[in-house]
Structure formats: C-alpha cells, structure tokens
Image (tube, rainbow, N blue to C red; front, side):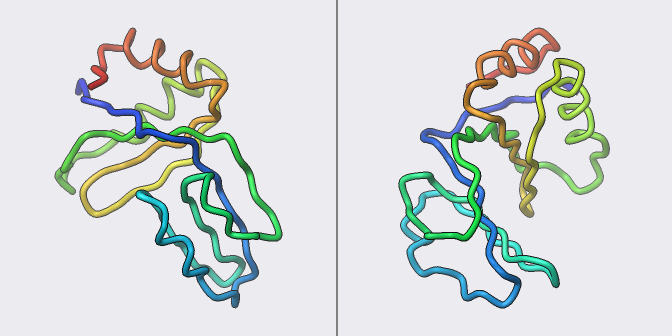
Length: 125
C-alpha cells in the first residue's frame, strides 16, 4: 500500500515524568501533543518551544504523519514504515491515534527518511 505522508511543522520534544506527576497545563500551548501515562512513567510529546521542565527530555524530533483516517482493519502500515526506516538505520518513536499514525524521526534524519519513503513509493504532501 502506498501512503500519503505529511511532515508536521516545527521541532518536537519527548518528555518523561514520574508516573504520578500531574500533566503540565502548558502542554496545551502545543499545536500537537500526546500524553501517555503508565505504571512506570508519564510520557509527553509536544512542540519543543513549550517548556515542560521535565526531569528527562529528548529534543530535536520531527514528525511524519500518515495522512488518514486509516481503517482499523488495515494491518502492517506502521510495521512497513518502521521496516523501511530500520533498513536505512533510522530509529523511530511511533504514536498512534484513533485516525492515524505518527512517526517521530530525529531532526538530522528527516531528509534521509523522506528519501527512503519516497523511493518506496510513498508520497509527501
């Protein structure tokens, strides 16, 4: 399956907090953000310009969106993208929503990731 992809504007950060930490209200200043809480951590992805004062943060990420919505019956979409990028030695951080998937790529790898995905027949908006 050939996909339509889009690169979101801006640089993003991934933040890690203690599992019982409150979600910082400032996260809502980000146009795109994702919040996940588990027994082990509170993890937040948001625009790098939003300072969350997290104990641990990884910066300089870009986001590639798989343009959706994608039907829940579709299988292997994220795996196929991950495999292509892994073969080019590009690591990813993946997020999924009800409608689609998002792939975070280190900023320095975005150009190469675009080339790999384009060569595989995927189209960028």
